[in-house]
Image (cartoon, rainbow, N blue to C red; front, side, top):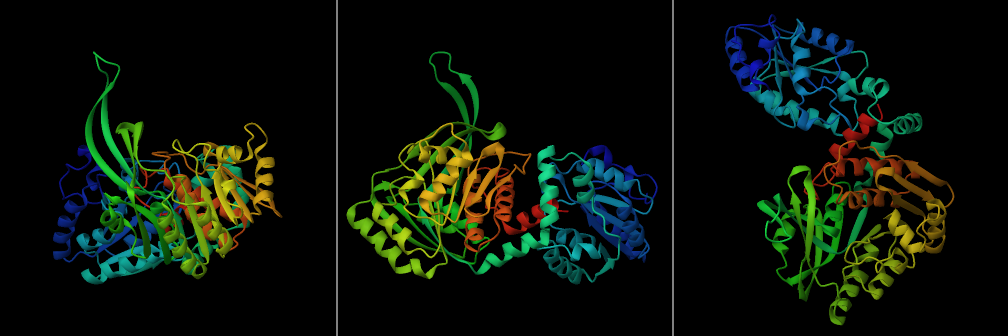
Length: 522
C-alpha cells in the first residue's frame, strides 16, 4: 500500500476515504480500542475487482449488523479471479471501497486466506454472501477455516441473501479479457457445461489408482545477472544470484497427479552416485509411494539451467546424465517390478523423456499389461529424432506436442488434423491430445472427431513443465472416459496455471484449478 494512504490518524471513521485505508495490523489495534468502548465490529472480505450494485447492497446490509465495518480485499499477488485479473490493482480497489459511506476501514489482506485477518481483527460478526457458500469446490471448503478462526475469537458468521451477480461474471461478459476467438469458445462451452459439472468430474478422480513410470529428473535453476560479453574473450559474463532445485520429469508428473488421485505409485531410476534420494522423497507428496532403481554408472539426471532473473529468461543449459540403456540386470529388475504391480492400477502413466530408462522389453510390458495406458514420449535437445511415440505399439491415450506428432509421422508440413488421425489409427488410441503452444490444443477422438481449445492464459512466467502438467491431469480424465471437450478445456486450464509457475517449483493443485475453472465459466 502506498505510504500516502496510511498516514492518517485513527480518529476518522466514515468520513475521509483516504484515512480509512490502513495496514491490517493498525486497524486491529484501532478496533481493539473500539470494542473496549462497546462498539460492535463487523467484517467483510472480497476481491472487489469491479464494484457493482450487489457489492454495495451487501456492504450496506453488513453495516446494519453493527457499529464499525472493516473490509479487507484480496491482494494482487494472491488474486485468483482468472486470466487478466485483477483488472484494477489493489490500490484502486481499496480506494473504491473506502469511498463508500457504510465502510469504516479498508485493508489489503496480507495472506492467501482470511483466517489470519479474523484472528487479528476479532470481529463480532463476519458477513458473507450466501452465494459464496454454494460456489463449487474449495471456495465452499474455505468456510471451515473461517469458522474455526471465528470460533477462536468468539465471533460468528452472518449470511446475506444478496441477488446473484459477481465481478467475474460482469468482467467476463463485458470486458475484453480474452481475444474474440477465446471469448466465443468460452461462451459456447458455458452453454454445455457449468463449473459444477467440470469440478464434480475432477473430484471423481480421487479413487483412480495411478502408476507413474518414467525418467526422474532434477531441474536446477541458477539465477544470474548477465553483464554482457567479456572485453577480452567471446564469453558472456554473469553474476550468480541464487539456486533453486525442483523435481522434474516423472517426479513432477507424480506430484501433479497426486493432487487429484489419492493412490499414486512411482517407478523411476536414480543414480547410485549422488542419488539425491532424500531430497526427492522430501519433495514428493505423501500419497506418492515409490520404487526406485539405482544405476551405478550415472548420477540422478540433472538439468541445470542458467537463467536471467529478469523475466526468467534461460541463457543456456548443462545436463548431467547417462542416456545409455540400463544394464541387463537392472532392466530385468525394472521389468520384474512392473510385472508385479501393473495390474493393480487403473491407469499407467508413462512419462518417457528418452534418457535410457525404458527399454523395449519394459515398453512391451506396459503396452501389453496396462489396464489403461497414457503415454508421453518427449523430444528434447538430448534425444531429438530418437524418442518417438511410435516406439509404443499401443496406447489408450497419448499427449504430445505438434512437433512430436510431425516427427513421428515424418511430415513437417502436412495438415495437423490428418497426421493426428493417421497416428491414432496406427497406434489404436482411444484419445489423442496435441498441445500447440500459443495455438492451444487439439483433442481427437476416433468417433467424435476433433476438439480445438484456444489458449486460456494471458500471463506467462515459464513454459517449462506446462506440457507435463497437462499430461498429468488429463490422463486420469481420459482413463475415466470424460468427454473430449472437457478434457481439452481442463488441460488448457491446467496449462494456463502451469505457465505462471517457475519450472516445477509448485504443482497445479485442485483448489487453484477449481477457482480458475469457476472464474472462466461464470
